[in-house]
Amino acid sequence: MKVAYLFGSLNRGGAETLLLDVFRNAKQHKLDAIGIYRKGGVLESDFRQSAIIMHKLPVGANMIGYLIGLRKLLQNNKIEIVHAQQPIDAFYARLACLGTGIKVVLTFHGYDFTDRKLSMLILKLIIKRTDTNIFVSETQRHYYQQKYKLNTENQEVVYNGVSFDKLDTILSHSTTGLRDELSVSPDSLFFGSVGNFVPGRDQLTLCRFLKRLNEQEVDFHFLFVGSRSDMVSRLYDDCFNFCQQNGLSDRVSFLGSRNDVPSILSQLDAFVYATDHDTFGIAVVEAMATGIPVFVNDWEVMNEITGNGKYATLYKTKDEGDLLQQFMLFLQNKESYRDKANDASQFVREKYSIEKHVQKLKTVYEQIGANRS
Image 1 (cartoon, rainbow, N blue to C red):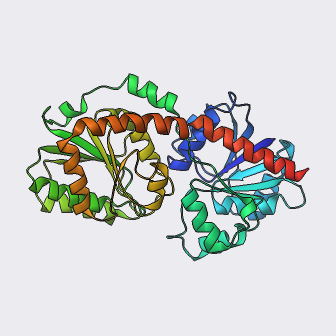
Image 2 (image 1 turned 90 degrees about the vertical axis):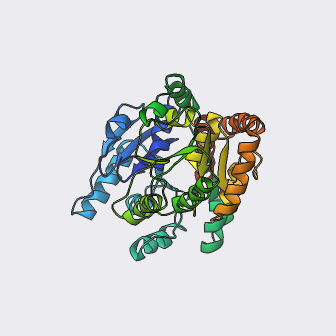
Image 3 (image 1 turned 180 degrees about the vertical axis):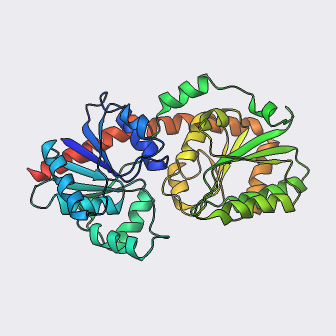
């Protein structure tokens, strides 16, 4: 089966990072594919250096021209399946593929909680007109299946995958210089969280927790790794101002966007995360794979990816008091939490590898091909 992957832009994001790892592993798993994108981005050169041939096809002002160009590109490359990463691209693909027999697959990487009217309209138009919808967790699949009353036969779960070989390569070359860079004492508890300040994340609960932890006179330094979004700048600003107003400025560092996250994780004593509605939680999985104790709120998908809390410590969502209580237990018995973290590392490496992700994708494609014939 030859597959065309459709992208909007090639900027750095969860879906783009995942697909870049898929492309880099394509030859190894005999995945026959091309990539088609509408806009460039910071990952454009990385995609072009991967094992997959990339085609840039801007939409421009002439939508009909774009659809005709997309149709020709798909037919000239003998594409059998188009795999879109956004509803809008699945919608374009469905129009371009009319009468061709080419199947359309759509992966949902998020929820529809913050979608605007036009985005919701496109989602409603396309979600029942794809040949298969792919979801990144059972939690997410259940949500969409219930809300949109979807046919259960055409809905698949393919967990996100992490390239642990790449992670381990970075870890093997990582340094321990971040404490020195930030002038943090070797005796201080050094921990943090990873995630951009965007809707779906809940860094403010972590800030309230840090205030409570400081009141317990714990010697710590906490890192927020993630960028400030101009579109929702208040999410970052509220956290930054809270730390300023509550005497945490010397104990909390806002590092912004970083390209050395695995190296940072390897230097931490623990990882703490809070979500409002993540669909999977790659940052959590990467932290678990690094082998450090992980604390995450009991949002349904976090129960799912941590084995119902067997491989991470769950605390009540938006309850900084419960997080504090769980964290103080960790401080009193670090050794047992580290043992649990070692088990967690083995668990996620077996379940959420990029290799398993690609294998599952190929199985879905083969099923679609069997149905086609």
